[in-house]
Length: 271
Length: 286
Image (cartoon, rainbow over all chains, first blue to last red; front, top):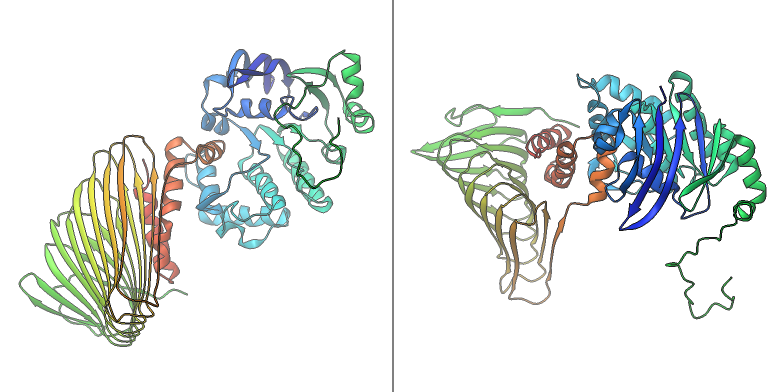
């Protein structure tokens, strides 16, 4: 049975259609790279699988290990083994990292984890991710640097042991060394579980480290190209223009982000 | 570092090495003469004075039991003493508090009303000696059809006194909450500081919260400030927590207990902080 099976998925935000018929199947142990220019629906797809209330599924289906994922709430999806490492993890003042992690772990256990076991695992994982030891006592993501937040997402993935891990630009904000540490931790999780991955990134370097088995290019709400890691390399070298040419489509204009003159800048806005 | 918490099992035990109780009818006076951490229950309607003797450094956990209808609590921080107090109102009781802080003394006091019901809570603080220092944290969870009224009055009687009052409210369903916070710097109390901050977190649109910050200033050369904010819980926070498997209910209680965890910071002692946070986490569930 496939871990994830998406069929003809259409998704809207505030009546604007973002995803226009996605088909995607992920099996155990597979690593899928999801690529595409900004603003074409990659994050929308991940957030829809997780169940973000902002996104409305207008048609299509998502089957996760034989269950209808769309009928499940966000927390039910998480407890069933779906995980999303977010691009912008929330900062929650007052809530300590350790209280949060304990609650998340206990949410998927019948008996609460013992404090000893929890701190042992927490300590090992913070060490592996080379995070500061005081992490447990700090408030959830509050005052964390960009890189620390991303490592904290991976730490959660490690502790929660998902069946399907999704990473949304988890590599942005990480320096070269941190990227390697994160990739090693992901490799480590894959060694001991059958976790499948759906990874959104713009950087070939990260893909080389996680070695996708499949690659997809999402343009204007549909998957246009599919292949293996060679597709990742091709896009790294040539960009997306060849895809626009091949499929005879125009680049979506980023309407809302019109160039605003700062008044003093002499450079002409690029067309 | 943690110090052992000394349990006073009954205020009717009149004497020990650490304290002494004077009692007449329902009036109790508890004298603390040794620096220590104490814990005790107000288990009947009573008028209680706690006198923290000169130079003593003490932490107190005071529980007002469920069956109490009316209680009066008075803490006197004598010269050069330091008192850190947490009062948990487990009753639907009407509580009157009256505290005084003498020269060079510090009173840090937190109060939690986390139960369902209707009540009125009046509390006043008198900064009576120079360099007296007051720090107040009040936390309310108001749910269902709770109606709670809070009146705070801080009186700066002499110069060079400092106060800081923070009120935290969590409002759910159709709860009502009215809080008047008054800080008064009288003529002659120059060099004094009075600060106030109130924050209310609303979970439903049918709640009614009304917080009035009042600063009465009769002297020059003083510092005073007030801040008040009301807001709703951040949907993105809830989504983030739920995406890690917490039920909506658990997510709310984690956010609320985080919001109210500021109560525990009146204590330096780790064990006492843990105790307070544990109480809050238990009560914060929806």
